[in-house]
Length: 219
Length: 183
Picture 1 (tube, chains in turn blue, orange):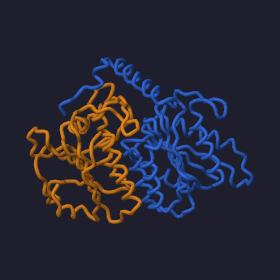
Picture 2 (cartoon, chains in turn blue, orange):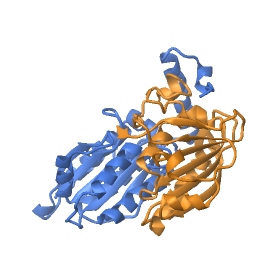
Picture 3 (tube, one colour):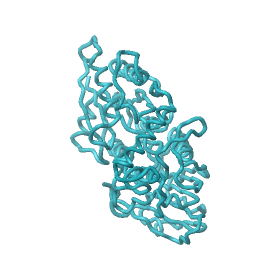
Picture 4 (cartoon, chains in turn orange, green):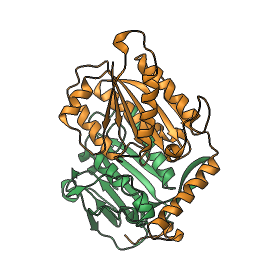
């Protein structure tokens, strides 16, 4: 069974979406599938510009499962990915048994804030004639890359890993699931504090001062 | 890069009741005979617009301004001067269109990177003092009920994140139907 993992982050490396897909891939390959036909064959794609090549479109049309992962941008999916989805919709999809899953991570703590973005992916499936297999809204995405992967069920990433494992099970069974919304197992006030310390370090690293973070421009 | 953009200043007197219109309709001022009350600015397709690359430069490198210089870098600051933000866009799966979304994605400098809690959820702190009334006019010949529901949820979430208010959300089969209303 061919599975396409599509990274919809505009970043070419070190993205939270990439981290989530790498974890999902690890769980998928760790599952022993009984029928040989369901043995996962994973292909990775990057969708970081507003266009997608015809060659990749054909490859995606010949998979059993598409998994999109992207950051939440202004309460929806990033514009460049939306542009690619429109291009994909206009392609001729003959296989309507393809399952589509989505993983949307947001910088906010609450994974539920990714719900409208998952709905956009779900609506795209309906328009394209594909099957929505379920998605995950991940909160605290800004900290994911700094967090270690620990023993099963432990550590600040545990709720995210649990949701990814469940999605891996669904994918390998070629099934569908309800959308899930999770946050990192890390106190919200500490996450907020760490993020704000990070912005201050970054503005200083760029030669600015803390007060510059609130600069108002005339436009 | 999409073929699109630039900002056209129209009837802007520098007051705080300015309307900022972001639309994917090319030649917006001439192709539609719209009735618009008061001062307004329009951001519409003209030239090339680059998508947001997620660098956060608009927060930490040149705070308040996007680091990509293609004519759209000051949208965040323009939003800081408007009283009403009006999105006129094709409805794409419940989202605004790629052009309008690119402008929005490139304008996150309207808000401050620090977090605050509002309605029990984490959102960004405001950078400017203006409270935006947000309206969205979606068009498309086959907008499903699910897409309308998603669009309403996204606009409500936008208003929460801009710390503003939702004024109006409407759906039309064609952009031409907008000629019957006053913005």
